[in-house]
Image (cartoon, rainbow, N blue to C red; front, side, top):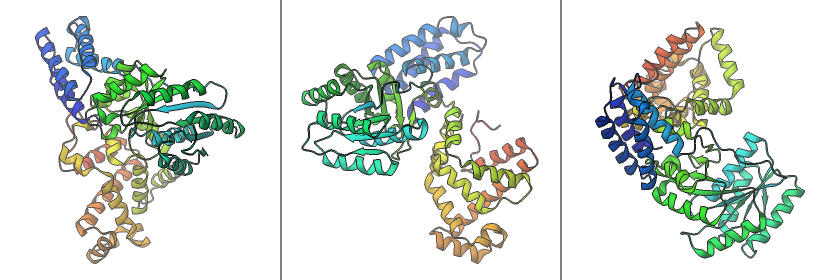
Length: 462
C-alpha cells in the first residue's frame, strides 16, 4: 500500500533528518521533490498545491528554521500536514445514535466493490460493535449482485432481506426497514445500483431513494486504484447526495496512494473505512494519523496491537507462554500454530507493513515475504508425523525427502523451515530466562535470514 509515494517521500525526507541546519533554499528544493512525489502518486493537483503551500508556510517560518533539529522538524511538518489533508487525527466513527434500525446507504460506481463492502461493514459492526445487522440489495439491474449479497450474508451470519429485479428500489428498502424492525435489527445496510460512469439517471434514482428512506449514514464507496478519478467521482456524488463519509476500497492494490490523500480534501467528507483485501474481515477504520505514519515509513504499531488483540487466540497464547515458562520444549506443532495465527493477521507482509522502518526493506526481501511461503511452511509441518513434530531430530535425510514429496516442496524447503524453527526455538529459550533483549537479538538475526540483508538502517531492532 502506497509503496511509490512512501519510497519517494521517504528518500527525500531521509536526506533532511540528520541535518543540523536548514536554509530556505534546501527547504524549497525538498518541497519541490515532495511536490513531484505527490503528483507521481496520483494526488489531485489542487490537493498538491494546497499541501505544499501549507508546508512551505510552516517550514520557512519558525516551525523549522528555529528548531533544534530542523531536519526532523520538517519531517514532522510534512507528517502533520498529511494527517490534516486526510481529515485530522483519529478515525471518524459511524453515527449509530438513532432509532433502530439505523439505515446505512451505500453509493458508488459499478466495480468499486460496494456489495463486498456491505458484507465487510456488516461483519465489522457484528464483531466489533456487537450489532444485529440486516443487509438488502436495491440493485435491480444486476440480479447477480442480489445473489452475491445473499451468499456473503450467509458467510458472515447477517440477516438478509430478499429482493428481485422486478421491484422498485424504494419499495425494496421500505420493506427491508419494516423487516429489520420486526427482527429487532440494530442496523440495516442498503446496497444500491452502480453504473460504469456518473450519469443523470443514476443520480436521480439514488437521490429519490435517499429522500424516501432518509438514511442516517450515506457512504460513498470508491476504488482507490482509480487515482485522481476517485476524487473526481467522489466530488460528483458529494454534490448530488448529502454524503456522511467515504469508504476507500482496494487500497492494498494501490501503490500510489493518491486517492487517500485526495478524496477527503476534494469532497470535504471524512474517509471512514479503508478496504485492504478481498476477505470479509479486510475492512479497517481509517485513521489519518496512522496512514500518514505508514506513508512516511514510520509504521502503524497501534493498528498492529489492535489486530493482535482481536485475532490472536488468547487460550493458545497463554498455554504456549506457560509451557515456555515451565521450560518445556517449543515444538514444530507450536511453530505451526504461530504461523497459522500470522496468516489470520494478514501474513508476514501485512505485519511488516505496520512496523517502523520496514518500508526500507529491499524489493528482493519483500518478494520473499508473502503468504504463499507461510502456507508452504504449514504444508511441510502437516506432512510430518506426530512423532516428528514433537521431536524434529528424527528428521534425517530420507524423512526430509518424504516430507518434501508429501508437501509438494523440495528438501531444501524442508531444511529452510527447520532452520527457521531452530531460530524460533532459541528465542523461546531466551524468553524462558526472562531475557527480552536476547530474544530481540535473536529476532534480528532471524530477520537477517530474509535474503541476507538484515534489518534496514533505522529499523526497529538495532
